[in-house]
Amino acid sequence: MTDNTARLDHVVLWVRDPLASAGFYEKAVGLEPLRVTEFAAGTTSFPSVRLNDETIFDLAPLTMTGKMNMLPGAADSAGHPVNHVCVSLPGPDFEALRTRLEEHGVPMSDISYDAYGARGTARRSFYFRDPDGNVFEARHYD
Image (cartoon, rainbow, N blue to C red; front, side, top):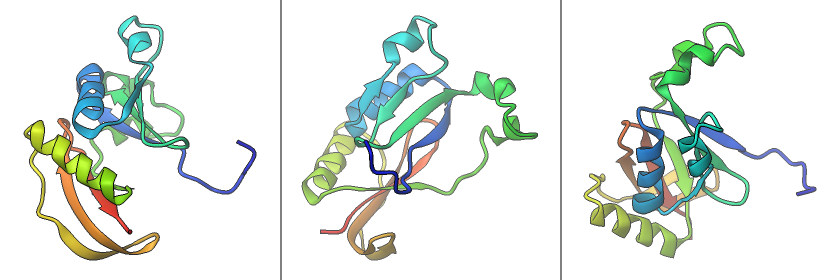
């Protein structure tokens, strides 16, 4: 990619079991798993899942907290309460996500309407949690 405009590259999520989390995000959420085999083989520190061509979620095991020393106090971020991460999807993908989550028994909020976001007013949105308690909002604008 040669376009150097500002973009969200990745979000690191603290998880208890990265392999189980990768399975959740692949099966229930529909994201592409990355580096799962390498993580299982011990050749990489964590797996990831791809949201789109430009953004991934890193699934960092809680056992890594001691190695998170890039800034003083960074290890203390494990379990730090981030309210939620919002993903914007096209309408059909929004519906497909809700269906997959229902099929996997993932509790979800009711659908809300006309919520404000980065692209203006979203038509619909709903919330769900991953197995580690991270809260996600799914929305679509079209």
